[in-house]
Image (tube, rainbow, N blue to C red):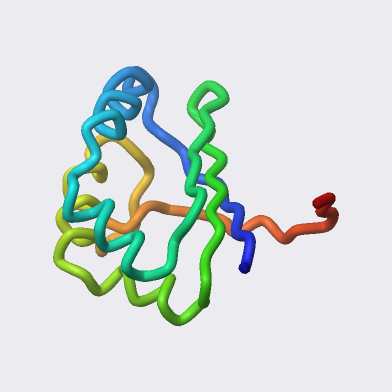
Amino acid sequence: MIRKAFLMKIYPGQEAEYAKRHEEIWPDLRDELKSHGVHNYSIFRDGLNLFAYAEIEDEARWNAIAQTAACKRWWAYMAPIMESNADKSPVSKDIPEVFHLD
């Protein structure tokens, strides 16, 4: 299993909306994540900063999620409330792992 961590950011005043949208995550998006080998996916918030952690089976399958219709719809839905790229994907920064304890 590959552990991934990354940072994202929401816009001021959008904290509650961001949480609400994730409480109601779409079943087809959840299914896409699972079918692409994503496990144990969590997002934490500190003010406007988001820290995401996921365990994935394969980098190629993880990257392929971006090409799914469900993911593209989700990005468009989330773009108004968080920092996003031109293609509506979230601006994110990968964080390298430096320590792990089983």
